[in-house]
Image (cartoon, rainbow, N blue to C red):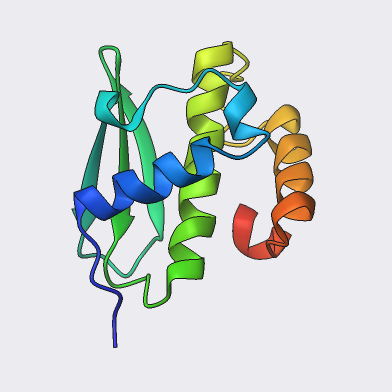
Length: 119
């Protein structure tokens, strides 16, 4: 059975994570300033992109049958938001060295599987 996800539920997960360190220290935009989308693909778990000044986070309904996987995917995409806000992205690199370092710290703090987190 799949987890019924909606843009509003994605926003709720985003808001929850934003309340915990290290996310709470990153000056991330509030959920109201982010556009959340649902995809029906089985090719990937989640995606982040920016259009203008608006962050977009999309999660696959087919890939998230449990809340834990949705939380992990959101935590991952929020690292992309953090890098854009902090201006620490590396052109042409989806996951630069800083992303991987922060990801390792987040995985340790929250008990996430780093292979799933970076996969």
